[in-house]
Length: 370
Image (tube, rainbow, N blue to C red; front, side):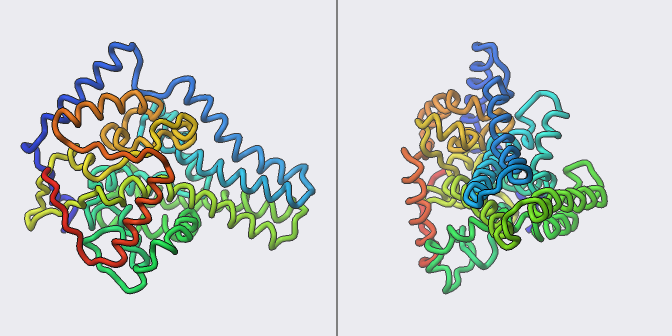
């Protein structure tokens, strides 16, 4: 089914979001603040960028001890994940700053890390946030034949072990980004007409992607191979380790927010209609975790508050903790779910259980009334 045919019900349960939007607007007005980042966001940006850049500089200039070099590569992996979660993510949503050029510059940090801000915006902003957990539309639940993230996807025999091997493949996520994925996505998005959403020509996007990847490999792999005292294969292994740490971190943050038992995975009818309001669909297919952990919330860019993020992706994550009280209260008033696990480890456990169920059962029976 063509993406342009998919429609959410605009007459069913829409009062929830209207009420919620008003309350959120009132919150910002009453507290005399705007929806963008604050001083905390600026400090975090400096920290996350430093967590990646400083270790790289030390590897290229001063360090001679192999153990110290390995540790620096590990820190870079955490820094890479931190930049993606806490800086680039808000910027690509236009939520970091009211100045468009600031969002563009900080969004481009993804290119500096080997990815592509353009393909990310299309996959994440256009597809994932609009059609959350809609099989065939949301690419975040479509990892190919390797894993089964949706009860509507075909189940293969190997999937019965996916709750075991999925974590390893999460670690390969960013390696996929820096190699072939961005190029395949750009070609596919062009055919689907989705590149038009970015107001740039396909040739421009492809050129920027190629040049930025060449520069990324040059700085992050070639220079360490030349300047670092570590043996060449050690540097290559550390480069892979960097990406494994970053990929595993990102996978463990994003997947437990959607691939969980509470998700109902809506499917459009033959006419492309989904019998749910868009905002209500977010509540049924998104889950929070570890909301009371200030440190965890700080490091993961508030993305443990995925419910708030999906309802208000254009609001900077530094506001999500306060907004969560408003969202939870409003959801309860309208008898709608507000899914949340108390701890990060419980969220991972539940996600693992869902992976096992998806790998061993063809269908899931749910009785959710949207």
